[in-house]
Length: 426
Image 1 (cartoon, helix red, strand yellow):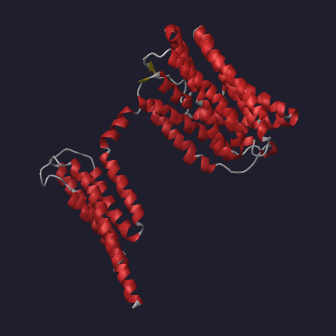
Image 2 (tube, rainbow, N blue to C red):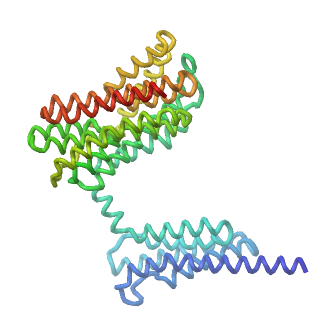
Image 3 (tube, helix red, strand yellow):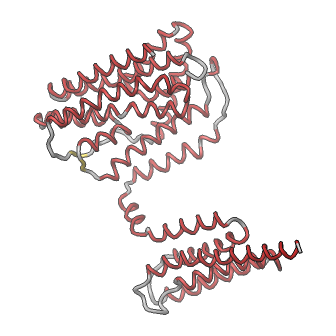
């Protein structure tokens, strides 16, 4: 009785999986048939019926391979490919369309049917749905490719190069004085900052070339708040009456730098987060609130061009340079800590923050795991961020208008004092 019950359950499960294979073929065939709905009957190579049967055939091939002969699946797969090629070549003699997307879709449908029966239905369902979405997104995908610029494609490929190719090859072990150098961790930090810059760049890029100041500033803070500060300072000299709006944008971009710091901390050393969160939140709020107040008092509808980034954040030379900078800061941090104690770390934070806040923030967060006290890391990170923002305030005041400099400089100073005070008290 148990054997009969088990056989019934197995047969029932096989039938359900074959039905699923048929359904997955119907999903892909529905998309194919919809795209060719304007064509007359007989002009389409395959529609919902054909794809449904191909999916079912894939499932049956899996059953036959398990129960009769292992050659069933490859023979039937080759048969499907042959039929698709014959149909494609015949259609090509009448319609000059060299796309083989439909043929590839047929082969995939056959494979999904086999996977649904013999491997894992969940994998088959996910793959079939993704395939249908890709096939249905032809216009969007082609439009994106047409809009993609050469340096953007180059940046995306280099991001893949430094992450999925180079990162796994690096040794994950401590080296150097005090064991502060770990090649894998250092390069992982390079990948992290490059990825955030990549997301910030495309957030602006996909939004269009012209957007409001607030929107542009918010996303520019993810990629290059310094570039935006330079951009808005120059625009303020051309249109001094709009200095308040540009000041608001600069404050928002600089304030967006602080949530980035929390992201670094959460990913590298979550234990530091509880000490760092309040100084960072207070400093960010003291930039966001004045920015919104200034905007409301001088609200004007206008559009500005997107800031031009001075360099590609994913340029391989820049990535290597960033890694070298991280290594130098880690070594200097270890040497200064041994020589001057906490004072050496603070000096390093201030001098590094003049040029770049990301490298020193990542280095200090990494060092707080075992090399320096977390309280020292918090104060040093706040000092580096405050120094970096004061440099931007100097840029706004020197290259922009006097009004722009005051509206940016005063909130920056208050934010600096409040952040340092909070970090010291905590």
